[in-house]
Each structure stands twice: as C-alpha cells, then as structure tokens.
Length: 339
Ligand SMILES: [Zn+2]
Image 1 (tube, rainbow, N blue to C red):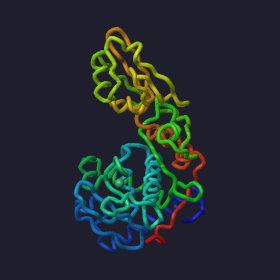
Image 2 (tube, protein in one colour):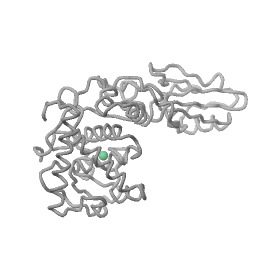
Image 3 (cartoon, rainbow, N blue to C red):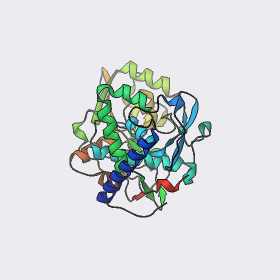
Image 4 (cartoon, rainbow, N blue to C red):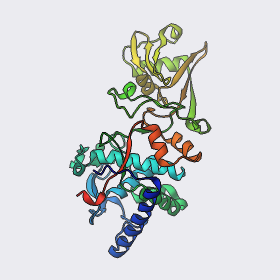
C-alpha cells in the first residue's frame, strides 16, 4: 500500500484523469457499467480489466459476484448517505466506505466477511448497506440521472483514497447524527482505537435528526422495559425509585442505569425502547414517562449530518475525515496493483 500523501488539488486532478480514462475504457468495452448498467445484480458480470475487484455475497439473491471496487464503493455510498448531501460529505462517505471495504478484501490482506466465501456481503447488519443500480434508480426516481452523476463524481474524486493508522486501513465507523458530540469507541464497542475518540460535531442542530422525544404512559414504559429486559420487573407505580441513570460518558451518553433490580447499559435500554441513541434523559411525571434523545445512531466515528454541516460551511472531505477520525492518515492505494 502506498504511503504517499497527496493534496486535494492533485487528488481532484488525478480523479478527473482517472474518470476520463475509465469512461474511455468503458466506451471501448461497451461495458454495462454506464448509468443504469448491470441489469439487475443477480446477473452482474464478474469484473474484468485492471482494477481491484471486491467479491460480494448478495444476501437477497444468495449469489456471489465481483464488482470493481470503485463501483461497489459508489453503491455503498449511495445506500449509506442521502444523495442530496453536499459533494464533500459524499466524498468523505465514499472514503469511509472504501476504507471499510479495504479491511475486508482478501487481496489487500484484509479479513473477509466470509458469507458465501466473499469479501463482503450486502446485509447492512453485518457489512455495509448496499443497493444495486436498479434499486438506486427506483429509489431516486426522476432524480436518478442527476444523483448517479453526483455520486460518480464524488467516488472518482476520491478514487483509491482510504484512511489508515500505522499504515493499515482504519475501522471507519460512522453514524447518522451525534447530537453535538461523538462517542469514544471504547464506551460502545470496548477496545481502544486511537482514531475513534470523542470529538465535537457542531452544526447538527439544524437537522431533524438532532433530537427526538418519545412519550409513554407509565404502564407502557414499564411493560416495554419488562418485556425486553428479563428480571427488571419494574412497576408503573414505583418508577421514581426503580429507574435511575447511574453513569454517563463524557459525551453525555448513558453508560449504565438501574431498572428495578437490574443494572443495564444505555444500549440495552436503547434497544428495548427503540430509541434513536443512548444520549437520553428520562423524565417521570405522575402521568407519563418522557424519554428525550440527542443524535441518531451509536455516535462513534464520523457523524453524517456533522459531515454535511461541515461541508455546508466550506470544509473539504479531508478536513471532515481528519476531524472525525483523529490522527488517521489519508492515503491512496494503487488499484491497478491489486489483483
Ligand atoms: Zn458481511
């Protein structure tokens, strides 16, 4: 893997040249990769040519096929982030997607997902969200041409770019919205990734995913908790003494709380009640229990709405990535060298 760092201008220029070359090659081949191509993924062709390829297990069709890495990155980026987001935010997302994939590619020395023997799968709970071009066309409707162009531009502009730490692709986790401060990975997944520390994420306040409120009757709250958390046995008449937040992380997310005789994590209550995040407060009144959350998602790594806010304020994708992945480096891999 190359250790050469390039500046944005160079990368943009290289991206444009790469785009021009790949368009020319595609024209020559008459390949179906052009807009709307790969007619349905069940018969997606095995990629050929010089580019690195990624093998994909499609969990919907139970088939394995190969795609050029950059085509796969486009589809993941389009599935993971709204295409209406700013170009620099989409570029940042494409680098995160490529970095994640690099960690999974056997040809890069990564650890494959393994389902169907492939590098990655299309199940978002296991690997990354993924949409075929057909599915994207359907989702985007009359904006499809515009969005394919926009996504292609963002992906080509970052062609081969990944994030590394100590020369290895990082675990480029991301989430929808942090609610103002991202979370240290150690508080969510354990372990200690130096590039997944808590950082501020300003500018998210303007987006609808910044905060939410869920209101329960006391009985609904007790029933939902008791159904999901065995042994909690809380009673609607004793919530004031039975429900207590015990500790929070520095970013304000609940790490431990008391529910009756059980001590559970914030994540457990998040799952039990379907909350947007673990950055919650619980207000108990004589009639109701109101749970207010900030942010959406686990809060670790890049905040997508934070990236959008930074992009809207003029940050480029590198500034966005280096803000959220503290101490990581931006490198470019030579896709032609990987087989
Ligand atoms: Zn997988």
